[in-house]
Amino acid sequence: MPSVPISNTSLSNLQPNTNSNTNYSTSAITNEAQRFATTRYPFPPFILKFNAGKINDKATIEDLINYSKINFSFDLDLVGYRTSSIRCNTNECNLLIFVKNSSSFSFLYSDIKWPDRLFNETFTIDKQPSIPPQLAVIITNVSYKIDFNDFENELRNNYANVLKVIRLKNKDQYDTKIVKVEFSSSKTRDEIISNGQMVINYVKYDVKEYLPQVSILICTKCFGVGHFRKQCKQTDDTCKVCSERCPDVNKHNCSGIAKCLHCGGDHYSNDMKCKVVKQYRADLTKILLSSSNKSFNNNRCNNMPTSTSEFPPLPRPTKSTINGYKMPVGEQNGIMTKLDQILNSINNINDTIGDLVKRTEHIEDWINAKQKFDLKINNGIRSLQHGISRHDGVLFNQTNVIDKLILPAMDDIMSMLSVMNVKEGRALNVDFESRGGVWKNQLQAYREKRLYF
Ligand SMILES: [Zn+2]
Ligand SMILES: [Zn+2]
Ligand SMILES: [Zn+2]
Image 1 (cartoon, helix red, strand yellow):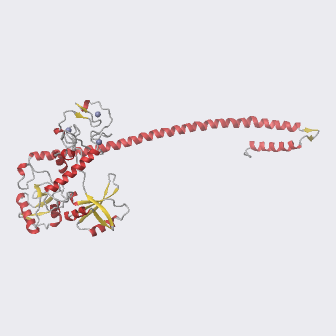
Image 2 (tube, protein in one colour; image 1 turned 45 degrees about the vertical axis):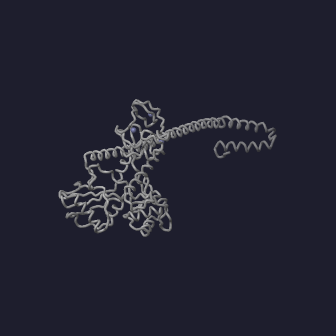
Image 3 (cartoon, rainbow, N blue to C red; image 1 turned 180 degrees about the horizontal axis):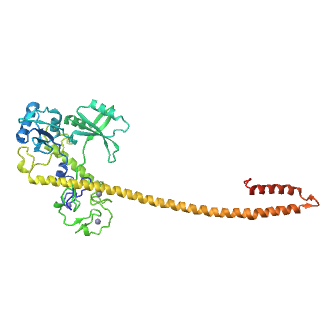
């Protein structure tokens, strides 16, 4: 199997083999890990559609940079551009423009008044790019009880350049207390982030940067973090379940007891819930943000090291193409892009399968538990039924004894006693005579079911 970068799942090489320093936080976060993460969060490109089959892209870009400088005194900062004929008619072509930072993004997004022509060619912009995380903020702890429309209106009244206000949903599509706000201006957004709060309807809310989770690269051989399997320096395999090392993991006799390589916890070594993995992700994010700050220009005040409006730029082009703004289009790069795409897909598939397996296991557990419970209930019902029929039998017997033996015997005894109680036409015991009469009547009534006790 190839090295699979696992975005939501795992990583592990915080260990010595990258660096003897036990504090891995900076040293173990490799270039590969950064590259892997940053290629997934570039700024989306601006796409200009030209009414020509072919354009001089270099001259067009130079024209755009000059236009921005002359008319808006703005230094447009790009990392690259390229032409593409995908989704174009025969006499059209697209020019994709990749900006370097959020100020250039917001300039092209909202500040610029586009000219009719660039380098003498007419063009249109069919669709603006989507707003990147660098121009969004997160408002935390927004109560479920508020009137969201009212909240949104108030927010738009109080703050400029708001594009979208969205209450985020969790995995199961339920509302969360988190609201994402997208801005068209990096200035507004950065001011809010440095204030750390927004006031809406007289309520102060804490505000944070919107950081989508960075993808994390993990080796499928040693389960180390930050390198591909191909680059792995370990000769043995590592079992991801028990984290034991062995020459061939396929022949490994696994105990099946999960023990994490990183923290020793009872989960697989590529589990995202691992605290070491989480820390790695946090550190990686921090490094990406700070390095993009450094590489960005100095207008930003240096005593604000956490200002992160500048998200990681695209990876550097290959050496030979650094002059101009040419996007690297070398064969190598093409292959890398393809590889990245494949890895990404594998990743997604892995995640999906993982999810499905988990869900199926839950359902199976539930069904098993239910079957056990049903069996117990059935047994209970059966034993109750047995008890009832036994009681029925006993009751039947006793009723028979009373009806067929005791009552007739009593009747006979009573009759005989009444005969014996008479001497010379007179009752010897008058009391008995009258009580005997009552008993007899009562017995008769009981047997005819007119009387119940
Ligand atoms: Zn490895
Ligand atoms: Zn094992
Ligand atoms: Zn762990």
